[in-house]
Image (cartoon, rainbow, N blue to C red; front, side, top):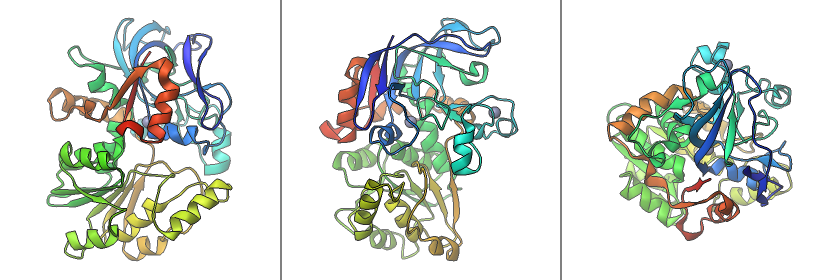
Length: 389
Ligand SMILES: [Zn+2]
Ligand SMILES: [Zn+2]
C-alpha cells in the first residue's frame, strides 16, 4: 500500500510499504477514506520530537471502512464506516475505567521510554513516535487499529467524511480545552491560537455557555475565520500588546479563563521569543512557551487556564509565580477522545456544528509532501489539509 512516511526533518515521502495485518484478536484493519494533517504532525515534520525513525508512517486523524476484523471485535462489522480516536486505549485498565482514555496503561509497548522522561507513560498514539508506541499512522491506504473493540466508532448514514473526520482529534481536543475552563454563564474566554484546534475551542466555549470569546493570532485568514465562522472578537498580537488589550476589554480584570491552543512552537514578537527560538534550535530547550507565558499573566485572579497545544519537555521562564499568586487552576493533557465521541457526534447530527468549516485544502495521498509544506508555511491561506487515499 501507499503511506506517508517520515524520513527526517522536512522530509516526508509517499512510500510503498507492506499492508497491515491483524496481529491480535482485538485488531481491525481499516481502508482509509479520509485522513488529515494535524498541527502536531508539524512538530514531527519540524524534527522537534525525539524517537522518530526513518520510514515511520505518519497520521493520527483518520477514518474509513472496516475491511478485516480480529475474532474478538464484535462492536462493528466488515463494511461499517468508522472514525478512529488518535489515542489508543484498552478500555479495561485503571485509567480507561475512569474515563481517562489518553492515559491508558496498556497501549504503549514502549512505555519505558516515556517513563524515563515523564515518570509514567501516557497512552500510545497512532503515528506519533516510538516513545508513544511506534504505531503505524493513518496517512495511508490502510491502517491496523489495536483494541478496535473500544477504539472504533461507527458513523451513522447521512453524514459525510468531512463532517465527522475531526471527531478523531481536533474537535474533541478543542472541546476538552473549553470544558477544562469550567465556563460559567457570562464568562469571557480568551483563546491563544486560531489554528484548527483554536477554532474548535472557540465554538466549544460558546457551546458551553461563554458570553464572549476573544481569539489571538497573527495570521489574517485565521483571525478572519475565528471572527466570521466562530463569532470571536479577535486580536492580532503583532499589532498590539495582547495583555493590555485583554485588560482593557475586561474592565481591568482579565479573561475568566484562557486557552493555550498554540503549544511548543509558539511565535512571538518579544525578546523572550527570540531567546526560545535560539535555545530550541540548539536543543537547550524543548519547547517555546510564548503563549503559555502570556496566558498565565493575562488570566484573571482565580481563573482557569487550559492547555490544548502540545508541550513535550522542559520549559524555560514560565511565570509560575503568576499562576501561584493569582490562584489559577491549570488543566491540560492529551484528549480523552473516546469520552467525547458520542456527545460530539450528537452535536454534529443536531446541526449545532458542522466541523468541515476548517477544511481549506483537499488533496490525494500522493500530494501529502506538498500538503505538509503549505500547511507548515501557511501558504495559500492553508488552515486544514485533508488527504484522500
Ligand atoms: Zn491531531
Ligand atoms: Zn486502558
